[in-house]
Image (cartoon, rainbow, N blue to C red; front, side, top):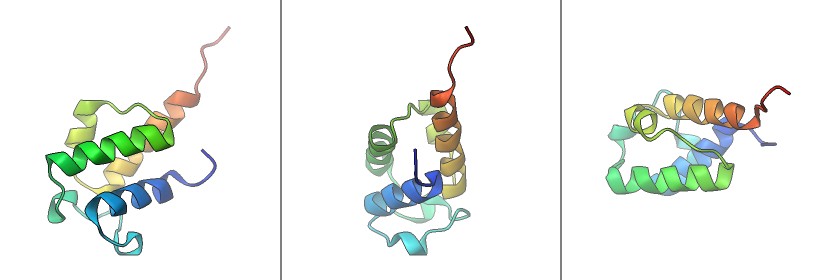
Length: 86
């Protein structure tokens, strides 16, 4: 992933929420926006597809803030790059 994870997450979340990315901050609580089950599933699909990661569904639904979501995606992206030792 060449660009920052945070930038990608903000872009995707802003598209799903219909909010400008520059208005979103890590500490913002997703529930303060129109973050419902449909929006969260759309975000999940977009994050996994566009960033080529697999997110744990329980962990995904447990995140409360954009920062927590960014951390979850960053961990998944890091795990995806790990290769087993020979």
